[in-house]
Amino acid sequence: MSQEHLHQKLQQASQQIDKAQEAVRLSQGTDPQLVEQAKQVLRQAEQELQNAQDQSGTEATENPQFQQAFEQIHDTRQHIQEVEQHSDDV
Image (cartoon, rainbow, N blue to C red; front, side):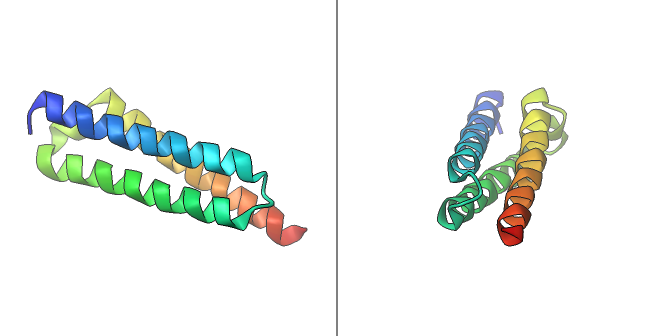
């Protein structure tokens, strides 16, 4: 995979992560539909990263943008879980 194509894939994943984070913020823990939407978009971002890794191997995983996206996915998933737990407590 060319460097430019890898960058494009990582950019798409990053945009999807941003969408997921925004949906979680907007839900405020009170809109399960938005939380579910965030989870779906996050899965798409994970798939983008997986595709980039499959096609580029260590070139992808050593890329700082890849590493940042991976961490953002993890952080967003944790946030979603916290929101879901909070809404279950209410």
